[in-house]
Length: 223
Image 1 (spheres, rainbow, N blue to C red):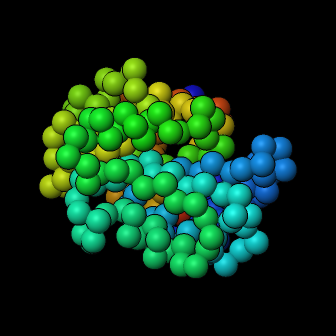
Image 2 (image 1 turned 90 degrees about the vertical axis):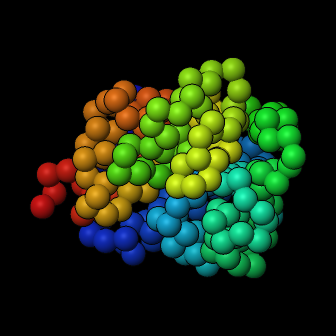
């Protein structure tokens, strides 16, 4: 698929621009549909954007935040994306829908979360790993082949944890994708993403529209 790319000087500028972009989409979604459905990935890059977002004029009471992916870990574990998400949002009154990674039957929990997702997500935020993974769609894992479920579990531990994640069909429900990419270790993966290179998991993502916001360190050919 085609991706638009906008490059910023650093992570601070990228985070502020990302927050403004989300706010604009949120107001449009609420005007047209009454609710803004926003799915957020884990990782370090989005938390700064979310902290900025919490200070802006967002329609929080009409915003539902879903998780793109989550580590299978206890609720109070510092590895959980949910803890960072809630910390970044602070007192913002969004409705957060956590992935049920504490359930005994994780496959049933993933199916339940997938069934609760709206048919159309207004915005899905994605990150990009140096190895080309996005969400928790990680290289060589069988989760890459899931086509009949919007949410599934990785078969193997990645970074020491199994993950619950939106699958390719789940991400395809997005009207808009917003990728936040920072750091020079992402440059090679970003070059492949822009080329829609299927050799990396991110290169196989499809959705309605896609905007990549990257800092100068990550952007190919921007030295």
